[in-house]
Amino acid sequence: MRQMKKLLAVALVSLTVLSGCSLPGLSSSSSDGIAITSMTTTESQIVSQMSRLMIEHYSGGEIEPVMINNLGSSTIQHNALLSGDAQVSGVRYTGTELTGVLDKDAESDPEVALEQTQRAFDEEFDMKFYDSYGFDNTYAFMVTRETAEEYDLETTSDLAEYTDEFAVGVDTSWFNRPGDGYPAFQEAYGFAFDNIRAMQISLVYEALNTGSLDLALGYTTDGRIPAYDLVVLEDDLQFFPPYDASPFATHEIIEKYPEIDDALSRLVGTISTETMQDLNYRSDEEGIEPALVAEEFLEEHNYFEGEGE
Amino acid sequence: MNNVTGNLLTDLYNYFVNNFAYLLSLFTDHLLMSIYGVLFAALVGIPIGIFIARYAKLSGVVITIANIIQTIPALAMLSILMLVMGLGTNTVILTVFLYALLPIIKNTYSGITGVDKNITDAGKSMGMTRNQVLRMIELPLALSVIIGGLRIALVVAIGIVAIGSFIGAPTLSDLIIRGTNATDGTVYILAGAIPIALIAIIIDFALRFLERKLDPTYNPDDKTPKAQTVND
Image (cartoon, rainbow over all chains, first blue to last red; front, side):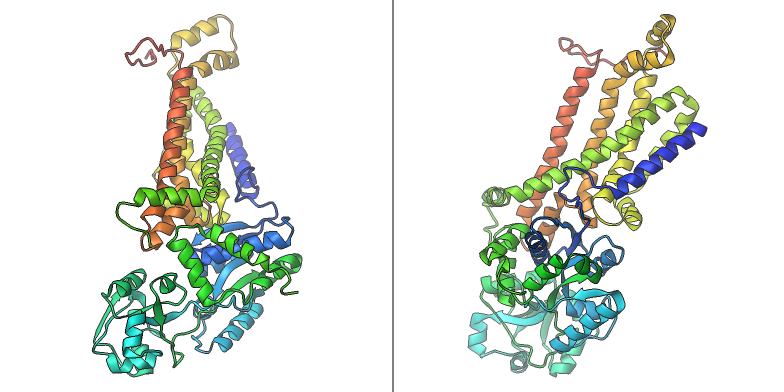
């Protein structure tokens, strides 16, 4: 029994050592222990890979952050940063953070939302929510170019006249959601659609393209918008909360490594919603991995040297 | 938009060509995580197996514990360990380690206890010490069975590492997850699944070959399958 105990002790010690060390050969083992979180969405992975490449570039290859991919939600990303598993998030959205991690009410003015989010993260968690990359991945109603021209549609309010004509498809989770869901939408815009159905959101773009739907609620950065030449209707009453995307890091890490701060700051304001659509398209439809799309984009822009500072 | 029908093979080929470097890095990560996990399990498991073969009373307890570990679903195990060890590769390696223990301990144990008693007795009567018997008789004769355990452990490990994507480790199932999110993700799913299956098959073949090479009772000219003789 004594030997058993010894064995157990050895096993425990070796496990503890194992949990702390990084093993040779794994690209995922970082010597400096900096990790970037990313979610399952293509967009999140592309942008996170960009921040990884930027950090590598501006630290002269000295910092090689590890990617923690495929996290299910922003809350999980946040917990990873809180527990110290990671120090940087590739992308965070104001709308998600305000109602999620920060547990505040949704805010429809993008600037106020950004300011609130930045202040709350700074005060409550000592983390930095940067200014936006320049794209906003929110919900918006969209139609095909032909429909837009035929009915002369530009804004969401323009839809009021055609509520009985259009076949509408919306996201299942949006349909019954309180706050910014369909019930609240009816109140805000003052009209409801006669023929509306809830469906899987990734299917609506194809359905618009083939004509099964006339009007759909989709994400504004989806790559299929330019691919199918869809027209995004302006949310003229600012009903949908903004989901402006920003880099994110803990204050601790950017104070320790100012080059990380520099690298992430340079990305601010460089990716418009249209650019993001193209990047998503390149990955989702043309089959290029997010890591490679990110590298292409950065090389094309020479890693944004000469800007910032 | 990909042409869905008919062009799947072309798409797959294009995908491999376009993303080869990235795929390769996922491939090595996937393979290395499996190998590390099994390696650590072998470092711990083989001595335990030898130990319980010598002190037969312990064998029941140890194998039962290893069996219990095996019954926990891999995803649950990953999530539990994630709470303690955090996200990333090391948690995946530890999970692989735990699942690899059973086949390694069990095969080491049965390999050594399966050695013909007459042979060990012969060794003892020649004046060999206990360690000499172990080193010169039992281990060489049990080697092929032990390698068999490693082979099973590695194949299991490759499947477990695939789940590691859910806790942020870079594995080939990153591609599969991407495929399930995309509208037409068949290409990505296949691009992830085919290499995973390939690793498993290659390892299985290679180690099976090694296993046969190391089996002293195996005679390539004799086609009839043979079991190692067990006396009792």
